Length: 155
Image (cartoon, rainbow, N blue to C red; front, side, top):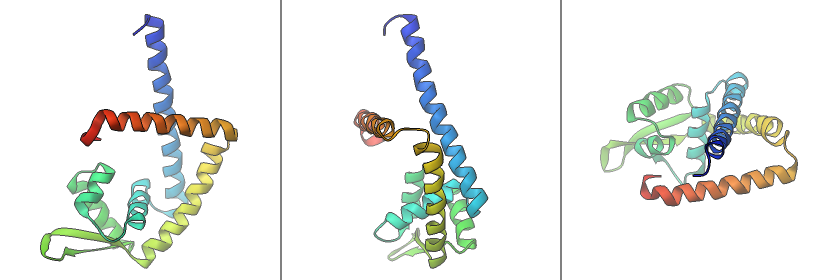
C-alpha cells in the first residue's frame, strides 16, 4: 500500500460505501415496515420464494439470507401466522421443511414491491444522474464479481 494518507483515503472511501449501503437499507426497511407492515427480511423471503421454481427448504432460505436455522424458523413462524407462507414436510424426508408462498404472500409481495420501487426511485435513483447510477452499478457489479472469485465456494 502507498503512503499513510493514501491508506487512510482508501479506508475512508470504503467507509463511505458501507455507510451509504447501510443507510439506504435502513430507509428501505423503514418504508416497508411503515407502509406494508413487514420487515425488510420478510420482504427478502417473499422475493426469494417468488423467484424460485417451487418451494424452498428452510435450510436454503437460511443460507440465502445468512440466518441461523433458529432465526429462519422464527421468521417463517411469523410469516406463516400472518398467512404469507405455507410450510410442509418434504416428500420422503419429514425432517426437511419446505416453504412456499400463499396467495396472501403474493399479494403482500406485490404491495411491497410497489413501495420498495418508489423508495428506491426517491432515495437511490433520485439523487443520481442516470449516467452516475449506471457507472455506480457497473462498478459495484465488478466489485461483486471480484469478491465472489476471491471467496469461491465460501461466498
